[in-house]
Image (cartoon, rainbow, N blue to C red):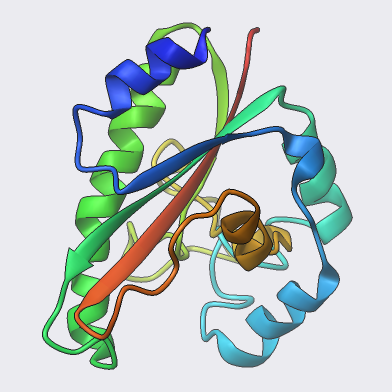
Length: 179
């Protein structure tokens, strides 16, 4: 599929910025995973997070099995970016956009693998580790769960990460290839 066809589709939505990325240019690092383990309460509690997603090396191989990737962001306005409850409420719209773009790519007969900006929250309580994922078709692992150095990707593609205390910037990364 041609990049200009994807561009034509995604630009009809409130995508803030986007870049086409070659999977080989993405930096993977175990230190990102260390942050997950130390700071995220979902570590070890979700199918979309480590260790369930596999080692960083396995995640790297999985991502590099695709020919291309679309890295994009959306923004949401909040009263105070430090209010986590308010901030997290804005994630749903970004996830909706991510699903629309993912579906479009799948409808073009592409194989896709989608990562998003936070761990999956489809279920109130994830079945991990005792049961299988109840919504595998909806679950998007977190970009950082794969050890991807997001600030490096943002910098390489001259994208914005911080727009002030009134805005949240959400990111998704969709890998794709011909079957």
